[in-house]
Length: 351
Image (cartoon, rainbow, N blue to C red; front, side, top):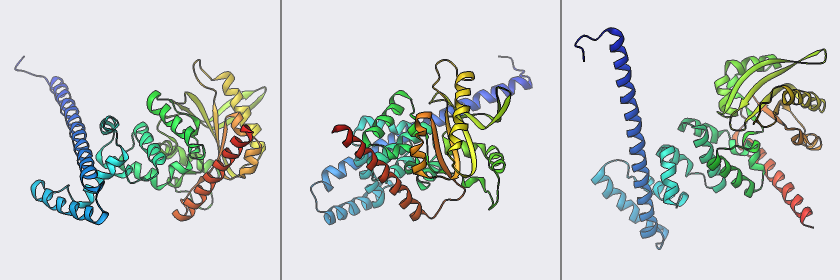
């Protein structure tokens, strides 16, 4: 190698070495995480099988407390009583070691620590699957759980068998269903809108905060345009926002409505969808779908219009999150009503 290296070569060499160091560090962190999660799982398994399984609760707690003291003396921080119980929770949540190894490559201990606190198995599976698919940070995972993403997603209103099947399809075949994509309501609190605003204000602010908007909608979104002009006959129409969803493999148009949803909005959006189907759909893609975002809507009216048959989803948008207890009550009630309808439909079909 020449003793004289020009500036350009020095820059390239520095960049190459920097990339190698960063890649190595990333791999090292991943390897350490896999080993740590595996260790914690095995500790949790030992505690569960040897201490908790056949012991009374108080006796078990006493033994774990003593175990924590001894392990902390020997190995330092990380083996507190609370953390030992978290290791047991990890084993309880993921009893299959093969599944654990797969998860530990994709999720950090901090991710898993948050996920194992979710007691509902299907809800936990939803967040686990979406976290991997969307590549959420721990902070984003916390935000998604706090904003009750699962309860807002259409899949939560479906029978358990459907939820399990849709999550399996996403995990194993990298295919997403519209039920995993559609939400109601959408939380747009990051827009920072004041008391008075117009549809144009919402559209403009969404574009300014596009990254946060896509995070709320899902990372597979690709922005295509705003106020997209389409000409039908001698008339011009304008689609508010147009996106493409990679996993759904279809165009997604978003129509913004400042007030309540009205039945005539169906005809307008159906027209847009049919135009997109005819003029913009590529070979191998699924038919376009639409989301109408409105301030209020009547669920009964939406149901009677059978919008799902047209590929249209109507959802409210929230510019502020309501009090958590009120939000929980409202969403849980909506889920219960939806599941009750499914059960009634199943019963009527079986007769």
